Length: 169
Image (cartoon, rainbow, N blue to C red):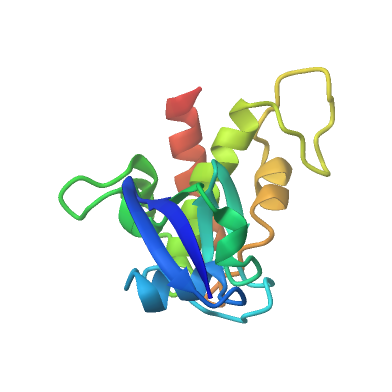
């Protein structure tokens, strides 16, 4: 057992956890934040994506103790039904979900991805490493490729992200 201090959705939290506890299990089972989903439990689907230290992580593959002192943002911390984050509102507007299982991970990933683009972090398909990154369709799809939607709402998801990216430009 180990003490772990995290700031989750703006609130400092201190947990005593088995050192083998994943960040996902700490969030879901110990803090009762169930928005992040356990999909494949192998880091392949992205349903568990959260923002840790400003970067998106698949929380099923990372141990909670590795995030000592980190700021963690889950879907619950991005917005509320009354005051949605712009990405949440765009997902609703563009009907970017079907069953909704992947949606929290998709949204957290999209929010962090736009931060990465703004910071100039290239992807595998970034054409010019010396120029500002342009969020082309290929760039967006490459960056979101770690988030799978079994229902196939990809074009709607891309539309929502593109809309929010246009506002942030």
